[in-house]
Image (cartoon, rainbow, N blue to C red; front, side, top):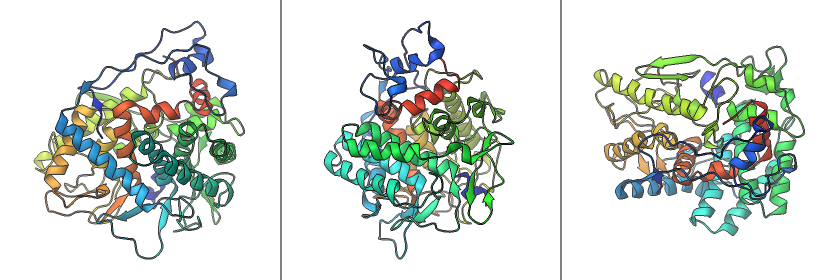
Amino acid sequence: MLWAWIALLGLALPSAPALAVPVASADESSGAWLDKLFDGKPVAGSADLASASGAQAPAPVRRAAVPQDDGVLLDDLSQRSFRYFWDTADPKTGLFPDRAPADCSRPKGQVVASVAASGFGLTGYCLAAERGWVPRKEALERTRRALRFLAKDSPQKNGWFYHFVDAADGSRQWGSEVSSIDTALLLGGVLTARQYFADDPELASLASAIHDRVDFPWMLDKKSNQFSHGWTPENGFLKYTWDTYSEESLLLLLAMGSKTHPVDASVWDAIARPEVSYSSHDYVSGAAPPFIHQYSQAWVDFRGMKDRHGIDYFDNSVEAMRAHRQFCMDLSKEFPTYGPDLWGISASDSQHGYLAWGGPPRSGPIDGTVVPYVAGGALMFTPDIAVPALRAMRVKSADAAYGCHGFADAFNPGNGWVDKDVLGIDAGITLLGAQNLRDGGVWKWFMRNSEIRAGLTKAGFQR
C-alpha cells in the first residue's frame, strides 16, 4: 500500500473494548497461553502450537448496545461494502479489482486487481457466509477458485505477489513491484479462509501452500534487518524498507511464524517506534495517514497483550484514532465542515490525484476532503466516535457519496466534490472493522492460525 503513495449491525462500547483473559500460567513465555486465549477448535496447520486440552475461551467482552438506528446503518454499510467483492470478483481467477465505479456501472476495458483488496475480499466471503448474506456453499466455491489460481497459476516471485495485476490472468500491471505488504494483506485473507473453511481439505491445503511458499528471508534487507517494500525485475529491491512503525505488523508476525521460511525474532525490534503526542493523546506512530493503525489489526487481535517493548498496539490504535479526530476538529477553523462528527483524512483520491494526506502531524495539501474508510476502520477501536462519524457522512453526502458498494473513496462536503470510484481496500477495512466490532469474528478466525501465534511468541507478547 505504501508504495502507491510514495512513487453492520453490531455491539459497541462507549469506549475502547478490553479483552478479559485467563489468569496467566507459570509458562507465560512459552506461547502456550496463546492457545488458551483463543478458542480450542481445530486449527489447520497447528501441530506446533496445539491448543491445550480443555482450554477455555476468553470471557466475552462486555459491550453496550448500539442504538437501533445506528445498528441499521452499520448493517446496511457492511452489506454494501461486501457487495463490492461479491459483484466485482473475476469469474476465472477470483481476484478483486483495485477500484470500481461508485455508480456500480461495469468497468470498461481491462480490470486491474489489487492483491491487498483480494485479501480483504477473501475475508469478506467468510463473514458473509457466517452472517447468511450468501450461501456458504457459494462462498466456499468462490474461495477455492481464488486459492487455486493463487497457488497454481498466478505469477509470483519466491511466493511474493505483484501489487497490481490483470484481474483476468494475474499478469503484472502498471510496472508494479512484487510487494511485501500487499502480499501480507493477501495472506491475511488466505489464512482467515483456511480457518473458516477448515472442514474443506482442498482449501486448507491450497491456503497452506500459498503461505508456506513465501520466502520471507529473500525479501529481508540483510544490512538493516528490515523488509524491503518490494522488488521489480528491472531494478531489483526497492530502496525503501519497513524501518518505522506502520502497517507492517502483519508482515513481520507472519514472517517470524513461518514454518518453512522463518526470519529471526530480531526483525520485530529492527523498526523504529517514534512517540507522537497530540492534545492529550500519546502513541507510537510512523507516517501520518491513519490507515497504518488499521490494516494489520483487521486480522491481528492485539487486545490484552504487550510485546517486549511494552506496547499494547490495540490501545495504541485507540489513541491514534482519538488523536486524529481531535486533529480534524482543530482544522475546523480552516475547514468549517470538519468537526466532532465529521472527520477522517487518510491516503486517498482527491480532486488533484492520489494523496498521502493525514495527521497529526499535518501531511499533504488538506482541503476539507473527508475519507470515510478512516471511520470505517476505526469501528473496531473507537465505535463511540466512529459510528457518529459514519452517520454524519451518510447525512452530509446524501446519496452522492453513498451507493450500492458503500461510500466512495472520498468526498468534499465543502465544495460538493465526490470521488467517482470505490476502492477495494476501503470497502475491505470498513467491512472487517465492522465485523470485529460486532463479534470479533475476523480476529477469532485468523488468530487460530499457528503461524500468527508463533510470530506473537517470537515477538515476546505477554498478557
